[in-house]
Length: 102
Image (cartoon, rainbow, N blue to C red; front, side, top):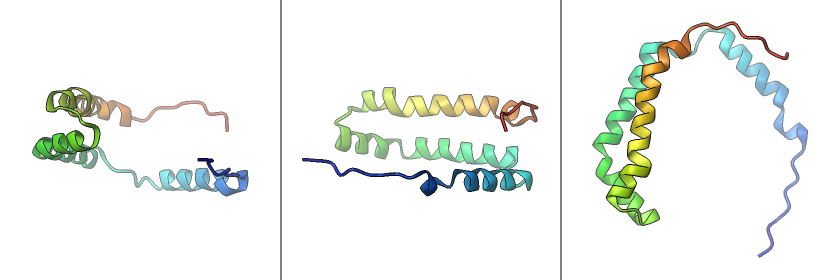
């Protein structure tokens, strides 16, 4: 089977407009506060734990992963990453002056 050739032009990306929109959004100080981000992370963790059996079943059906393998390679890794993010979030959100090439 031959894959179609896809041509992507620089104009299709509108990179300048995307960067400008992101800078505009950031300058309005509308990013989520610490409490809202922590609530979202806690809700994600709670959902993963609540639906753990369904996650295992989906991984079994889709990838033929046993419950042990699914826990070791999927669920526990996400839970560990969530713990790491929650531990470092406040520091990551603190203001930091950095130089940029722009």
